[in-house]
Image 1 (tube, helix red, strand yellow):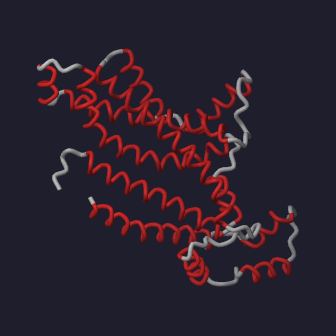
Image 2 (image 1 turned 120 degrees about the vertical axis):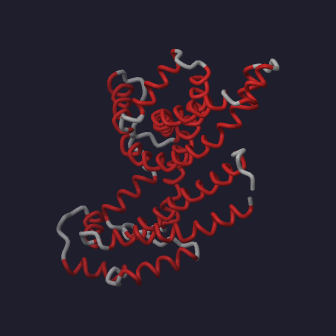
Length: 310
């Protein structure tokens, strides 16, 4: 177990460095001038003089080459300083702290919904194969993997807010605004997990130890808890890890649809303005989150997978 943890930690370091390097390079060599974009955003005007732009470039060190800028940023990151935004001069450590909390809350809500719905419906579909629930689950699995997240989200916003006026779900600043988009992401992605859990449950139910337990008179609930659930947890962990990365990407769309000032919104604005420091730092944090999630998944999988012999 310890060997797996050390291996994953060692692997995380070059991974997140490579991610930040690529994002920094793509933005640096992308068309457009950083100084002009930043100054236009700050002054709310399209007319920026060459002198003003040149002064800004020199004050922010934007006239340096790519290697110098990246090494300078990376050396500060090692010290725990993510740098300052070119747009407002605010510390990026403080700038991303609140948005990342909102995005993580939304993603965690999605994971809980994804896990509970996908696991329970998948197991029940296997137990009542070809029943009404199974047919609905199969229908939803195909449909949910075909419908784009943003489409169903826009439809829900229109239905609840515009058509019926039930909820004011757009533009809220409290954490309650994260519940609906989080639930939507989790529900839409459940189709994949339902299929995985159902297939694995059907295989486990045909195993000899399950048939023996039934022959000995063990109740269905105990069989599901002590035999089925233990054997389907490993693939659920693997699927949830992949879902975590997808949820982070989907949160960007949800933040835009529901007018939430989260991490994705901050990142997209920084990309449009070519704010190197914010983009590199944001992708570094995202890479770290995904890498840590993968590490935790590897540890859990090695513990849960009964085929693991060591």
